[in-house]
Length: 84
Image (cartoon, rainbow, N blue to C red; front, side, top):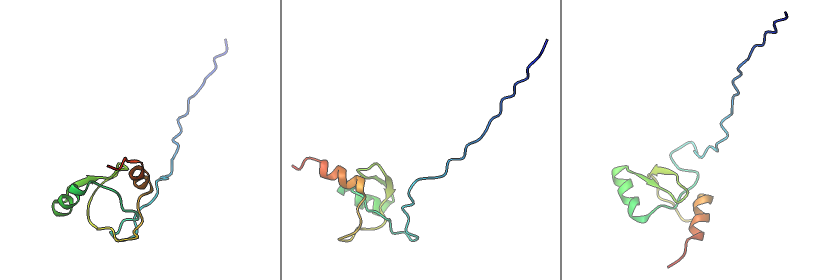
């Protein structure tokens, strides 16, 4: 009688972090996001989180200047909203 031994090996596959780094080295965000107007002041004063149109949550720390880069996902969603 022949006995065949089989072994099972487990291998860990490393997945590199492929998320885009949106930091700029200081506290200025790479993109500015669209958020509800009424939540901006509350977040700036109390440090509460706001949720952008793209789903990103963050506390408001900087005000966008004219010509600042806007999150492409927020921009796409904002343009798709019906104007009243």
